[in-house]
Image (cartoon, rainbow, N blue to C red; front, top):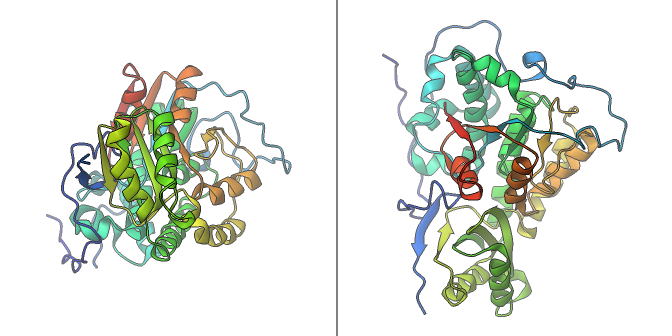
Length: 387
C-alpha cells in the first residue's frame, strides 16, 4: 500500500464549476455553468536507474535530433506526409485522478520525480488527490498536463508492442499547451527545459489574466463564419478594451471566444438571435489567445531565448498557422506568438486527414481531442492512452 501524504489545503475556487455534458467533447476547456440562451511527500514507486524520457535518440525517426538548420531555413517538413500521429491535450483536460498509472511504470514515475525538483512541490500527489480547485489553476494545470502526457508515452512504451507504436509516429501536435508537449516528444527540447517553459508560461498567463477583466466562452452550434458575425455584433456594443474575437477554432459547431467580460456578456446575450444552441462560459483565468495575453509575451520571449531548441525529428504542427516548422528560431517566435494568436486546431486536423493521416493516439488526461476529431471526421481512428 502506498503511503498517502496529507492533502494540501484547499484553495477557494475562482468560479463554481458544475459538471457540464459539453465538458469532455464539445467544450475544450472545462466549463462553469452553461448560460441559457434567453432574451508534500512524494509517492513511493520502484527504484529506477536511468530516466527514460521520450526525447532524442529514443525513437526511430527520419531526422536526426540537433541537426544543423541554417537560420531562416524552415522548409525541412514542407512536404510531410503523415500516417500516424501523437496528439497532446491542452489546459482543461486535467482531472483529479490523472497520473495513477504512472505509479506502476518506472520511467513514467521518474518524470514526476524530475518535475517535483523543478516545480518545488509534489505534482503527482496533486494530480491524483487534488484538490480540484488547485489542480484547475493555470499555474498548476499546465505543468500537470505536460508531465502526465509525456508520462503516458512511457505507459504506452511499457505495453506489448508499445515501442513499435512510438517508432511509427511520423507527425505530432498538441492543443495550445500541448504544442510544448509535442515539441518535447519530437526532441526539440529536453523534458526539463520544456517543463521550465510550461511553468513560466502558466505563471505569465495567470499574471496577464489578473491584470485585466477578461473571460472566455464556448459558442455551440454555429459555424465559424456565424461565430465571427456574432463577435462583430457584440463588438458594436462595447468599448475597444472589451472587444472579443474567436480564440479557439476547435471543430464544427464549437468555437471559443475570448475578450473583455462585457464583450463576452454581449456574445452570450446575442447568441440566441444567431441561432446558437448554447453558450458555455469557460472557467479559465482570462482571455487566452488574444491580445489580453500580450504581457506574457515578453517573458516567454526571454525564456525561449535562453532555451536550447533544436530542429524536431518529426513534424510538429503549430497552433498559430497549422504548419510544421523546423528552424529553431522560427519555433521560438511561434511559441511566443501562440499565447496571443487564435488556435487553428480545426485546420490542423483537417489538413492532417487530407494529407492521408490513418491513425492517431491521444496521450494524456481526458478524451477531449478524440471528441473534437470525431466531430471533424466521424470515421477518423483515434485511440486514447492515459497515465
